[in-house]
Amino acid sequence: MSSFFTSPTVLNTAGLVLNLAGVLLLFRYGMPFRVAQINEGSLWADKPTERDRSLNRRYTFLGVLGLCLLGASTGLQVAAALANSN
Image (tube, rainbow, N blue to C red; front, side, top):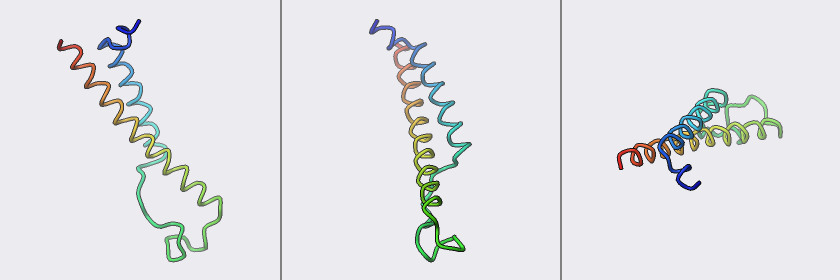
């Protein structure tokens, strides 16, 4: 059973699934970036509400998660290529 999880086909397929999930998250929630949207002299016309802060945190978290999934998918696909070459 342990050889199943290290087979190149399974590693490559898992990498592709994580890649798709990461890309979909990035398309939906965008790239995480650091712009001060919480302080008084920010881009907001009025002071941000708690809902605004919550949305900002959620979008930042999901954007970072999408980037992490892309990194993990690349690692799995590299591992699949290395396992296939042996």
